Amino acid sequence: MGDFKRLVAWQKAHAFELAVHAAFKGRRLAAAPGFRGQLLRAVGSIPDNLAEGCGKRSRRALAKYAEDANASRAFPRSTIAGLKCCPNTLGLMSDISCQSTAVE
Image (cartoon, rainbow, N blue to C red; front, side, top):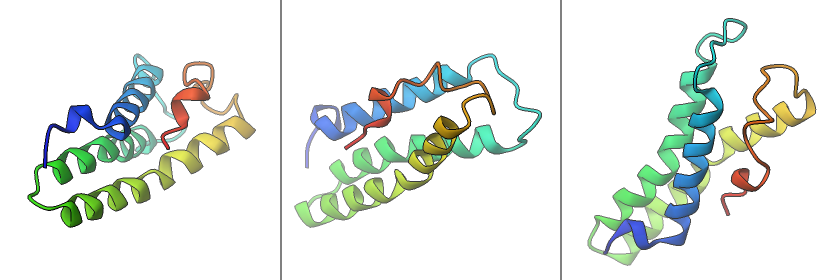
């Protein structure tokens, strides 16, 4: 279908992924083992789904992967919303800006 890097949705999802990765850089989360990897995989799946959809040959296939990317936003958004309620839990919220969580 085209170059995924031209999709505005991919650009925003990629920027969000980079922001979350940067927030975790150099931090160990002994209090929540596995949480870091799970969140990073979930965040990474959003731009990955969009890129994969662009590799397909039809708009219908791209729409399916875009829908999957949209669904992949649920876990990171829910997790980050929870961290906003309890910002001292992991000490990450100062590193993830509110703007970067708005992958719309």
